[in-house]
Length: 211
Image 1 (tube, rainbow, N blue to C red):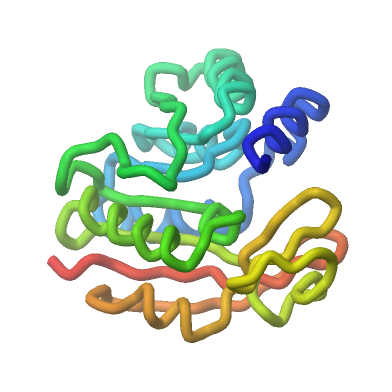
Image 2: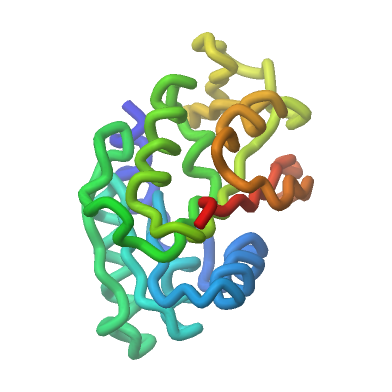
């Protein structure tokens, strides 16, 4: 259901999020650069505004998404921006194991991917996969909409803090889930911010794998 929603959305609205990087991506680039990262894995890259930004900043980028339409738009833009050689795209559903070897990635970024229509069990499994593929000392920056958001408890409830509004399902995070996901990590920051016209209320979480 949500895969079809995103395929249709990207098809009808190419480059729907614009070309400018998100604020969290700019933050993440600084965190990753300071840690000496050279490669960034972006989960849920969509049409690629943040993946392309990382590439322009000199990182090699692995961009994964379950939407072939979005990734096709990303590849086209990478060619136009002259960074195609630094971008690799992979069609993948994050509800399955990540298609990368243990300790093979320098850094991981995910803007609003963890708060898609994933169950708490699936979110925990995904973060465990991030931990598996990250090298020791690697950074993980992600953002999620939280339970203080205006759309929390609005629309159709699906249980497990997942609410659907306008065909778009979101898993809203309580703070306890952020803390639970940071178990075994070094949690550096949980930064509250707002984005968009509603506005959406989010946390930007920065944590590193002990190395």
